[in-house]
Image (cartoon, rainbow, N blue to C red; front, side):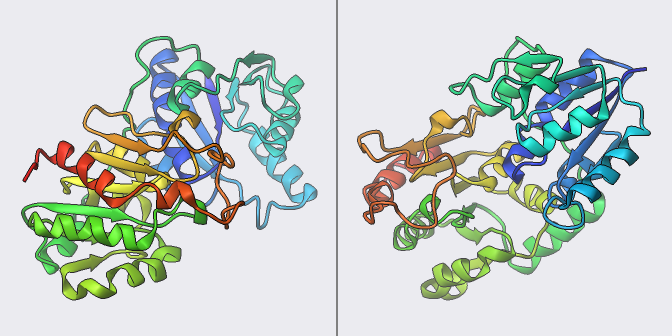
Length: 338
């Protein structure tokens, strides 16, 4: 039996976009077991995959931060006797783990740190979508637009049911995800207000989603709308949020993790690109989704992730993406033209 290890300790969105690769690994090696090294935050995602046998959390900012604790971590997982390693993550720490595990068949990208530790190097194609890049890693050459699959427990469904019933969320519901780790990825709050006003005029009920860190930002956005906007930031886990999104008509999100939650839920997602660009490979790719990106700015993109402040103090990438542009696209997606 093949015993496969996948290493993915990047951000939440990266974790979700690794699931299609894991799904196809299970097809390629039918009798295999697949374990995943993840972060504590993303362990929930991989644990919900029906194709993953075990999730091993690497707390790289906590208890596994030092070289000694990392070596002890490697010593423990080495006992699992893996036959193959696939590593979408390209960091030095990941390559260090691969090197010390000593598994004969290892697969990494040509842009990985310490790439010489991998027996099989796969070209990293910058213009490919992240899902396609991950599938390149395992030699999958067919249609790459594969949606992530997760299991949702009845307990989670009941929790979401309760939330919907408590807030009278029936009929047309739209979700807004206004937060991001990076400030220059955030669409201006007053522009989001205009988008919400449009959706309210079209008789949509609005839910603001996000994690615990997005609470303050979501509260600020909801202040002027009183009881017309429902707050859910910090109330749900990643998988619970995906279940909640399955019941909405559209999600409007920055270029951030909620975009990929919407993909997992297979709903219409409209992703707004401020400082980043879709060419990085993290755009929504199901047929019912879309994105908006300004191509006429010389300063854009200013970085792969964005910044805590606009490097040239204009934030033109956000301010020039005016609300009417977003509303026009929403009208097309929702078939609302009046």
